[in-house]
Amino acid sequence: MKIKDIANELHLSISTVSKALNGAFDVSSETKDLVLKYAKEHGYKSREERLTVKRIRRLCVLYDNIIPSSSNLIIALALSFSKYARQNNFEVINFPLESIKTSYDEFMKLNNFDGAFICGLNYKSSFYTELKMTKIPTVLFDNVLVGDKIATINNENINTITRIITLLKENGHRNIGFIHGDRNSYVSNERFAGYIIGQVMNEIEYEPKHVYYGTFSEESGYEAAKYFLTTDVTAIVCSSDTIAIGLIRGLKNAGIRVPEDISVTGYDDIDIAKYVIPALTTIRQDLDLIGEKAFSLLTNMMRNRSSQRIVISGEIIMRDSIAEAPKKVDKL
Image: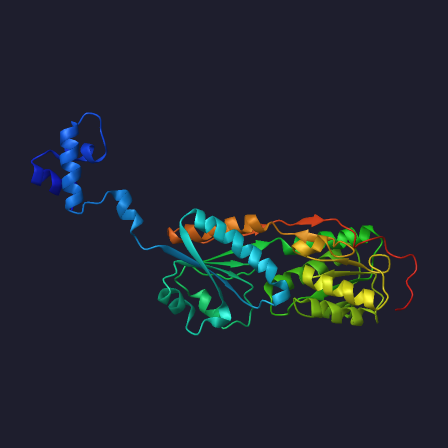
């Protein structure tokens, strides 16, 4: 039923009915009561009431290649994104990508999702190629894909790792190791590129033997410690805080002091980074800002605006896990 229908039935003008429904002062109380009673009895709903009965808009956070010990970063990102989505009356559901048994677009349509925020997508994921052609608004975190409905939000990975290398060089380190999180990870490869570029900029010769290829896990860091005992490194840059925490544990178990013998840096600034001993020097990601920007990118595409790429700068957090390079380093 429309305002015009009420006006015709009650023999009133459309403007009078509209005013009565909106409580205007220049309509008599008798007319207001008549209009409101008739509207209620015949199922008339205001625009606001009609909007509230529309389908709830749904978004999802999808995550891939997540190891339990590193999941707190993804949890924090999901919570940040969800906060901004729910403030704007969206429902948000979290799913691991591995649980999806259909195509990406089919999964989204079957579950009535209007868009997705994807974290941790691996190059080898079966969805990597699909996403290039998706018609569903999708935001990727720390990855890059080109598509009409694909937007990306990335950390300034290369620049921040380059700055870490410069910081270590200023502390006298020239033999600097690197722990790679995943050869098939865009973010880990960017951080590795920053490691190489940082050494070139600081006139340090790249040594392949100073690189350990692992995973984004504490166990990988712990195992890497055994490898670096056979090298001459005085500092090690890790692709994530979880790797760095495992590395510190492994070095300590081998009798190596951090940072007196070997300095260690991480990436992410997860909550536990400031509580490990020594407290971890790392690069902080503004997860709240990332969540806010990811939601903004997604809703812009839902309004048929063009996709974008945003790069968020990182902040070096100085703590206790780096020191000046030892004057003399014995073979470990």
